Length: 287
Ligand code: HEC
Ligand code: HEC
Image 1 (cartoon, helix red, strand yellow):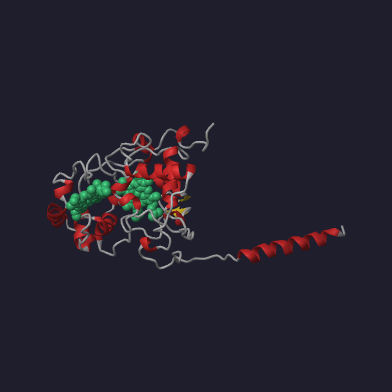
Image 2: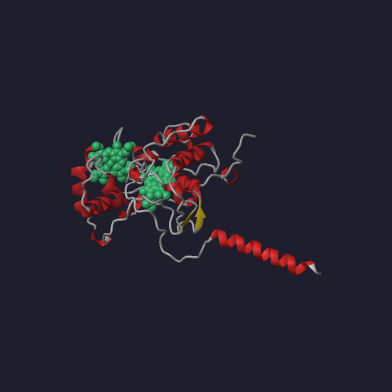
């Protein structure tokens, strides 16, 4: 009996001490405040990233290989349903500073995803791009390709402070959405600009050639992918295409996006892109 108040006091002091040290607070802020570095290539330390020795280095190198050769590499081929590698959109192995860069994104995860209505991990986000942008089947969580790609992407966030994103699953240097009125899009104008600026590589029929991937049709991204949205595609085109001369105006980008997305592409239905339940995840170790 005598000792009870003492214990309670001790607990109260202990808990108070912990909370005092943690100094967290609740926030309704719309966005996480981030440092104002606009160009991820100017993040201190990014130039001097070193691939570590040993199994970690092997995984980083494998991940880099997989994002570049997603369609043909035996570890990812079974999970890709079109002609797109990750780097068809995440240009230069995800190190292009603006074209959906991989740099810095691991700092944002776990993140809230309005689409999944869940907190998702970076690995989940990687696997979702397999299902949508690559029109394939979600590789098992914890599988070799999934872990290697996530390792490579995480490595590209080395030395950057964590800033989890409570609003959407996007990193600090994600493609900025153009502030344009989608109703101003004009497919006919888009067709003319496409013929002029894009068809030499992607073809009048949108099917590309050996080097340039298709932009619509069965072998392109499905209608559940980010780029299937006209504003999102326009925003990506503005900073990405044509390669090395990204000079489209906002209006041209929107018109071309509307023209590209006016063509048929695979329909997304979640069920068709999930593996059987027993292949959704794996114990992440050798037996
Ligand atoms: C058809 C183009 C395309 C392909 C192919 C593609 N992605 Fe993406 N991916 C995007 C776009 C666009 C976004 C950004 C979405 C947005 O802005 O909402 C994105 C987002 C992501 C993100 C989250 C980025 C962030 O800022 O948090 C990851 C991780 C990712 N992709 C990984 C991959 C991987 C791995 C592959 C290959 C298996 C892949 N993507 C294939 C277009 C693509
Ligand atoms: C000089 C050739 C060239 C030109 C011109 C060009 N692209 Fe591309 N485009 C590419 C290549 C190559 C890739 C894939 C990037 C990679 O693998 O590194 C690509 C990727 C894409 C992608 C993402 C992957 C896919 O196929 O969906 C889209 C969308 C796209 N280009 C649209 C356009 C549009 C629109 C234009 C005109 C404004 C354009 N491109 C001009 C070569 C070109």
